[in-house]
Image (cartoon, rainbow, N blue to C red; front, side, top):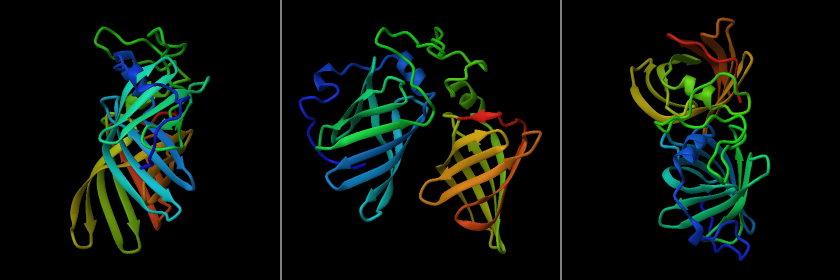
Length: 271
């Protein structure tokens, strides 16, 4: 994800064509906050997860480099500067630009990096990206109101944004146990509707701390949930019938992971 090079003559979008992303583009992007990204230059490959911040333009990232397996985190490292029709431009401050073209079904992006020969590919975890060159929402995506926000709806099966927004602000009471260790935490769903901040305490010993943007929901399907902990592994769990609690485990440790929602319920699905 830290790849290098100049775009070929056939690059998806020339830099001089870049225009600022309109408010509709920002609203639609918020519905697709998790991007799975692969960059390839020669024999090198960077596999990454980019998470869109609540401003609808800026990304945090977790990456793994092959060969070698080196990995790391990047904070506010890239920003969308243009989304026009099927063309997208993402600025990498101090380095260059990613330019790309959306696939016909608007679930993937392919393109290049201005600082390196090679390819940049994106899979949108939240489903199809809305918007078109005319500045109107595509079928199944509500246009923003006068305030610039997209109206909420529970009748939109093709875009996960309404369901994701419904999770924002939820407080999860979490307990992890492994052997004689116990971590008690409060997880708070960030404004993107998928990522978490947390405060935690450990016993025995009484250590305490905070975590920022440390985990993200990959999917909710029926009574099953998967949450990724980048660089560590996956939480998997079964949601109770009243959808107010979860029981499961962590892929990196034996033991148990339990969640209680204080005031709200989990949705039936979150693709």
